[in-house]
Amino acid sequence: MSDGMSAGTTSRFVRLGETGRTAVDFFIDGRRVSALQGDTLLTAMLQYGDHVRRSEFGGEKRAGFCMMGACQDCWVWTADGGRLRACSTEVLEGMAVSTNAPESTWPNLA
Image: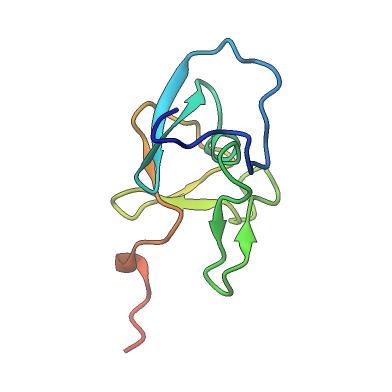
């Protein structure tokens, strides 16, 4: 872990076991954080906070719902605007995700 972020302080998940796996660094909204090899994005992200993203419809906190890739509650975005389901995407070294949809993906309502 770097840049002062510490897992566990206000997190939804606290790792109690499987601590011997290799650490991988990745980025959440530009902040460098660590996960363990084999973690899903959802697991890794919830070690650093109490939610994965906010609802685009009302701003409510979202932290996953179905945990099997069906509900779309845990979408996060890549730098190129692609969407990933955090609950079923494995963290990779150097991966960068955003918790906010890029403006380029917003519908044109004009």
